[in-house]
Image 1 (cartoon, rainbow, N blue to C red):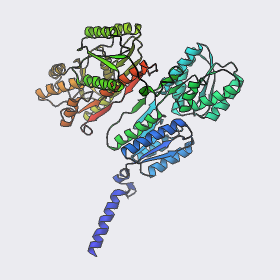
Image 2 (spheres, one colour; image 1 turned 135 degrees about the vertical axis):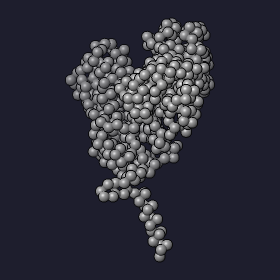
Image 3 (cartoon, rainbow, N blue to C red; image 1 turned 90 degrees about the vertical axis):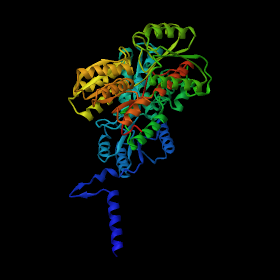
Image 4 (tube, rainbow, N blue to C red; image 1 turned 60 degrees about the vertical axis):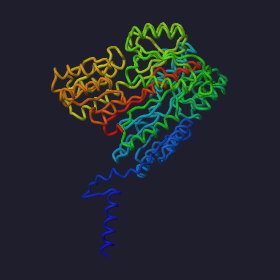
Length: 589
């Protein structure tokens, strides 16, 4: 009998660790420990090809990662979506991925989920009024601007146009409307802006009404392809000729562009949005930090490039790409070049890599040599964002396409810039310093190469936080160099012996600072930027507190892949951000 009682006690204790325990009206700490490792995806509607594809991408990623994914469809009904979210929380999902019907209306349900310890990622549309873990979406403002600029280019300024808006309150509606009006309010005459709820049938009926009231409309921008295709039917039925531009690049819309029934659409990557949502949900469940915002690229699809759209991999592209790198005496840029070389090899194109050794004069000469070798695309990682402007302008004058990587080229409109979000990364680093050492403490900053956009942006991110919450005792230039980082830090320590922390614009300077601090017998928290192998090892060993992880290989890879797109006649985004995250001892492994 005693054995039976002991067994019952063991069972009761075990059950108490699994389920919510309430003592004197208060829940125990176990309330938030019931998450079961599954992911919930609340999608606004499955009556739209874009969201069908998004869900497919999420399901594939979940299958690859062997995690359980619960998908629920709100059928564009806010009340139903709130109920769906509550049901997912009841199922003890660890992460909620939400694609809101209305960005405001779901805020209460999302707050309630967060209060129960559920992590939250929004996809395609934002959740307003609540701080979630991450938003993954296309740059809707930029996409709508691309679409509207194309209308201006084709129809001329002052043309009479209409806008078909999506679901009222949805962040995609707000952002695409903003992008449209950023251009249209200055260069076009907007005769009508009507809501059609992202729906094809409504797009048709609304467009019929618009045509009756404004028979001289020359073009229409629809916030998605479903409404655009509905507008096409209305225009055809009225026997009119009106230019139609949509947004999403669904299969039906791409076919319509190819057939000449639609003029253009903006290509998103819904499958990639769904995939990234699940992959980042897995990161959250494993205790890792993820970026607050993860943008996914968009591009303009017209009749000129529709044949190559999503088919670049099948098409042999000829031409040489040049990569002018600032220095190969830095592990970050070595890795960037390796990523570029691998992508070039995979695509079967010639890549010429030249190293400026942090010498602006040499880089200008390198660029001129690459142009003489008839490269079709120049990828440039500037030593100085201003000093290379003349050489880049000269290259563009000869028909060379230009992509900047990691650092910008100032004073000239190039084809694309691919870089980490340096401002956000530096803010993450500085917020971490504040969290660890407290507000008002004395800190120092080691700056990179003067004039480099990475120096400017990382300095901006640092000061966005530090000027409000810390006491910046020193800001010194150390040129992204380890030896200079060490000597500059030695000087800083002599002048400010009570420094508590230092933020270095890259890991090389941070590691130099670590040596100086060790030599001085001090204890100073050091945070770097780049997550080089040496820095990650230093974080693991406790010699550095943290670093910001970029993805230099991915930057190099994206540069080459987008160079291939340019050579095949495709449009590419003007900016392509690459994710960053904070690496500490807790997640350095």
